[in-house]
Length: 99
Image (cartoon, rainbow, N blue to C red; front, side, top):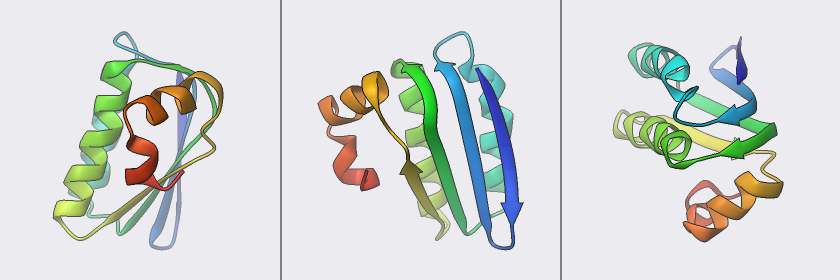
């Protein structure tokens, strides 16, 4: 898994590529913590290059969503396709994230 964080004014884009699973999710946690600590108003999670996601990866994204929302921020998930899209639909998260 690789990720790139891009800040543009009040908007932050977090692009995640590869596999977001139990092995790679701990690498993403500090970035999520930083976004919450900095109180970024809008976070876009771009998953267009994500091939695989498991429950720990979903948990990290849901955690970001809940923590940001609790402080008035907004999280949007974009670019879901293939296996990650199927997982989000199975868990009905496609309704939460408007994918």
